[in-house]
Length: 461
Ligand code: SAM
Image: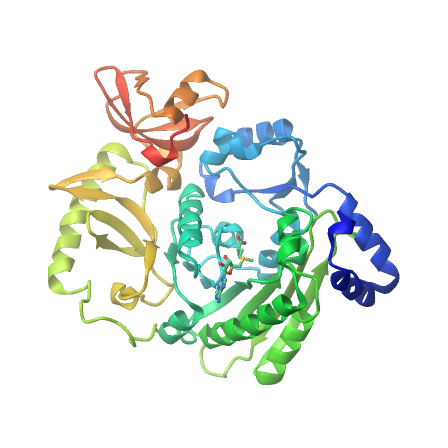
C-alpha cells in the first residue's frame, strides 16, 4: 500500500517523524487493528451481562486495549457485528485508537455534555456509557444520512439520556451559549489515519484538502468554545496526522482564546501502538469566579409554537397515565430517570434534563431533532404501544416475561427474521425476547404464541 501514498504526504510524514518515518511507513504493511467497546449500559442484569461478555471474549478472541478499560481488539476474520449480541447493543465496533479521546475527556454521570460531530456514534456511545444514564447528552451530526445512523446507534446501545440533533455548529451555539460542562469535538478531518482501513481515502487526500479541513476545524472550534461553560472541558480530536489540523489548529485557537488553557495533548501512532492513530487535545475554559451552574439555553430562535403550553401539558399527563398502566403490567421493575414527557406526533418520548437545571421542550423548537430522549412508545387511539428503543434501554429482569435464547438457537434467528415464536410458560401480553438475557425487542404473547414486534427495518433475511 505504501506505493499508493501521495509523494507529498510521504514527504510531510518524513519531515515530521525524522528517523521514525521508516517505522511509520512500514506500518502500512501491517493488518489494520479491529476493535470493539463493551457497553456497560447493558450491565443492569449483571449475571447475564458477565456471561455474555465471557462468551464474547472467547468467541471473538478479545484482547484488552491498553488505554480504554472497556475496549478490546478482536481477531479478524471474526465478525462480532454479525452476532445477535451486536443487535442487543452489547458492544460497539470501534477503531481502538479512536477510544482514546473520550477517555481523556473523562465525562462524569450527571454532567451536561455535547458531542458536536457525532456520527456514526463511537464517541457518543462511549460518553453515554461513562454517564450511566445520569445527566444530559446532546449528540449532534450535521449530515442528515449520518445523523440517522447516529440515532440508530443511540437506540441500539440503550442510551436513555441523549437527544440526537441534526444541526450546523452555529445553529447550536446560538441556542446553547455556555451550556455544557464538557464538549467532544471529533472534527471532520483529512483522515490520514484511515488510509490502512479505507484505501479509497488516499484518493481524496491533497494539501488543499488538509487546508480546507483546518479552516473548517477552526470555525467549528469557535462554536464549541461559545457553548462551553466557564470551567468546562473541551476535547478536540482527529484521525489525521498532519500538524496543520492538529497542533497548529490548537495553537491558533489558544492565541485567539486566552481564556482557554491546554491540559493535555496526545498522539497515538500506528507504528507505536496497535491502532490506526489519533490526535487528542484537552482544553479547559477558565472559570469566571461565579458559581459553575449551567446557563439556561438561549430562547433565541425558539418558535411561538411551544410544546409546553397548557394543552400539550394535559395531553402529556394523559399519556403518562397510559405509560404507568403499561409499566405496572409489562415493565414492573422499571423506573425512568430525570426527565419530562414529550409528544412528537404519536410518539411519546422522555426528554432528559440537565442536573439542577431545566431544558424546556420549547428550547428544541425549530431544531431538527431525530430523537428527543428515550422513546417510550406510541399513543394511538388512547392505547399505548412500547417503542423498540425502550426494549433496548431496560434490563430484561424489569419485564413481566422474557424469552431468552442462546446466540446460536434457531428460534433466535427466527425472531430476528420477524417470525412468530411459541410462547413459553403461559406468558401473555407484552414481554421481551433476549439473547442470553440481553433484550433484542418486544413480543406480544397470546394463545400460546409470541407475535413479533421487531421493527421491519431491523429484521434479517
Ligand atoms: N465522532 C464520530 C464517532 O466517533 O463515531 C466520528 C465523527 S467524524 C470524524 C466527523 C463528523 O463531522 C462527520 O460525521 C461529518 O459528517 C461531520 N461534519 C462534517 N462537516 C461538519 C461541519 N461543518 N460541522 C460539524 N460537523 C461536520
